[in-house]
Image 1: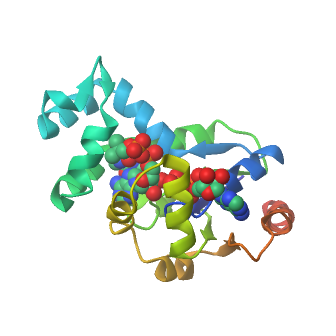
Image 2: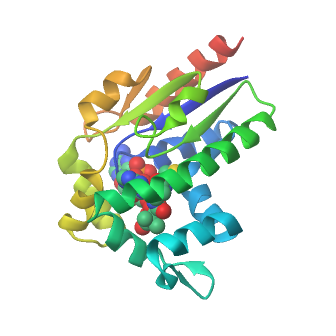
Length: 195
Ligand SMILES: CC(C)(COP(=O)(O)OP(=O)(O)OC[C@H]1O[C@@H](n2cnc3c(N)ncnc32)[C@H](O)[C@@H]1O)[C@@H](O)C(=O)NCCC(=O)NCCS
Ligand SMILES: Nc1ncnc2c1ncn2[C@@H]1O[C@H](COP(=O)(O)OP(=O)(O)OP(=O)(O)O)[C@@H](O)[C@H]1O
C-alpha cells in the first residue's frame, strides 16, 4: 500500500481535492482535524499546551482555538513550541491509521508537510496549487476573516513555489483549470503505481 501525502498553502483546496479522492474510495486522514482532536483528548499534550499558554488554552475542557491562533500566528517562537508538541503525536496517529487501512493507496492531507517531519514517512506527495490572491480570497470568504489574519498564517508556511517543487505531483486548482480530470488522471496513475 502506498502512503501519499497531500499538501498545499492555506486555501489552495486541499480539503476539496481530498474529498474527491475520498469519493473515489480512497481513505483520507485529515491531519489538521486530527491534530485538533488529539489536542482535546491527549492528557499529556493538554498539560504541555496549558504549560505553554496558560489555563485560557482550554474553555470547558475544549481547545480555545481562537485564543491560541491569536497568540501563535503573531509569535513565531510560541508557534514553534506548539508545533514541536503537536506534530510528533499527530504524525504517530497518522502512521497508526495508515497501517490499519487496506487500500491500494491512502492519503494524508496536511497543511504542513515539508515544514514538519511528516514528509519522511510518505511514499509520494501531491501538491495542490492556487495563486496567493485566490487563496486569500477563498479563505476570507470561507471563514469570514480579515486579510491580515489569513496572511499571518500564510507567512508561517513555506513559499508556495518551493513547496510545489518538492512535490511529486501537482494539481492546479485555479480559476482556469478543471480540477476533476486532474484528480481522475492521478488516481489512475497511483493505482498503477501501487500495482
Ligand atoms: C492554532 C490552531 C488551534 C487554530 O485552529 P483553527 O481551527 O483556527 O485552524 P486549523 O487548525 O483548522 O488550520 C487552518 C489552516 O491554518 C493554517 N495553519 C494551522 N496550523 C498552522 C501552523 N502550525 N503553521 C502554519 N499554518 C498553520 C493551515 O493552512 C491550516 O490548514 C490550530 O491550527 C493548531 O493547533 N495549529 C498548530 C498545530 C498544527 O500545526 N496543526 C496543523 C497540522 S498538524
Ligand atoms: N476550484 C474551486 N472553485 C471554487 N471554489 C473553490 C475551489 N477549490 C476550493 N474552493 C473553495 O475555497 C475554499 C478553500 O478550499 P479548501 O477548504 O478545500 O482549502 P484548504 O487548502 O483545505 O484550506 P485550509 O488550508 O485553510 O484548510 C473553500 O471554501 C472551497 O469551497
